[in-house]
Image 1: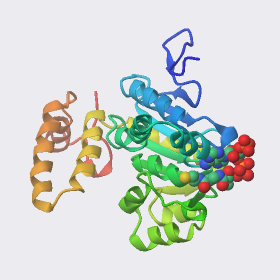
Image 2: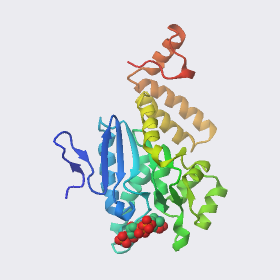
Image 3: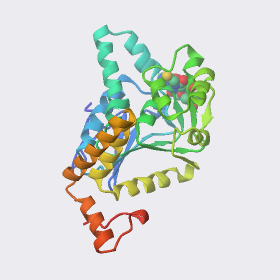
Image 4: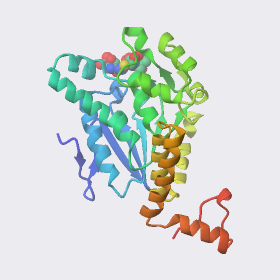
Length: 285
Ligand code: COA
């Protein structure tokens, strides 16, 4: 079966098997789609997701990605059969390739994606699922979603890149507590420890996520992309490097911004007095 393209009679929709995509007014809802396996992430799913993310990055129907899960789970983590057993049984070269394909979508691509990304955590979120969750720019959770670094419970460490990922958002005490105990926690606690921006009741989850996505869609997309990238790179630098980099990045942003947002903002505030930056967006064409 073709896992990359579902022909709707109009423009093709990427995915269709382990990954489903729905377009809605600039939002691409991207579903991990193995609900019967609680959206556990297999090697096949990684391959499909790589194709989907590549396609959406240059698809005009997608201005923002929302990554979520079909059914009752966000994702139950790495597939114990379709990732662990599968990669145990293949050659070293094939395993290297499977790891590379998994790393590609779960963090490399998402972290540096050209369009904003929001994780919508609708249910179970375990182990390896923390990586794409953290590598989305923003995250909203069902307050009753269940999170867990369950690895310690069955004899492995939070590997892949989970331990690194959690260290970028959680404090050491919280991270080590959950790494070492494997204790579960809910969406409300996930917001407290900084894993998600907000936790809301299940019935409000999609509306709140949509509202956030629409907010992002109203921004100048070039400046939004540059701002996200600038933040992510600058946090890895020392102060001197960050100051030089951010100054240069600011100049580059002005250069590549076809909307000329900086000029418009200055003109609307200083000359026309039609806009206050502290109170909202400048008037875009
Ligand atoms: N890998 C492979 N299969 C998984 C899976 C995983 N991570 N998580 C769930 N599944 C499968 C189950 O084996 C089961 O398959 P089956 O119907 O063929 O027996 C199916 O998904 C449904 O799971 P089940 O355990 O019956 O659902 P549940 O709603 O009772 O429990 C969980 C949900 C998420 C609590 C439970 O499935 C679980 O603990 N999963 C493992 C979570 C984990 O530790 N992930 C970290 C991996 S690094």
